[in-house]
Length: 212
Image 1 (cartoon, rainbow, N blue to C red):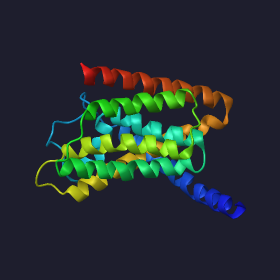
Image 2: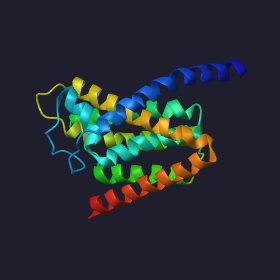
Image 3: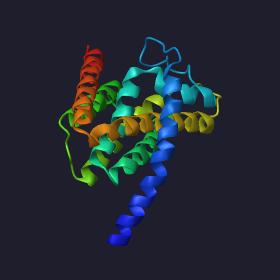
């Protein structure tokens, strides 16, 4: 048991410095001009650069992906690195489903609900069992991935596009982790609860738009 904990601590010590660097890069990317719409029109995205920029082209995606990192940081090891690994993996699966034309109902509703649920979990500082936390993150990741997959243009490289949006997702998770580490301090916990309320409010706004 002690050896297992030591390995987990070593892994976290290796991951967190890398996450900090990725968070800085992510912050720089977020300074780029963003379109007003949450998603580009179907078929308008393609290639590595489009895949890289697509997750940050919609505030709904940004809120959910940063929230995954924040919640993982709140939960601590091993969730701090497991959740940001599970999300891109299942998002890639959802992207493949969208690319090959598999139907998934209520995509926009699912994406909006991801922000609502994750924001509520952060706000409530919910410490769910690891298996349930992974299940929640994996479920919503499929919706985000499907949206990316269906918005890739015909004839473009699916592999490069997928690599691009997975990398961008990882950067957003890293930003969330870097922010979530302030939960070690009382003031930080208050600020994170405020961040959770912002994510929740944004999710409710997008949910209202999806259902309207």
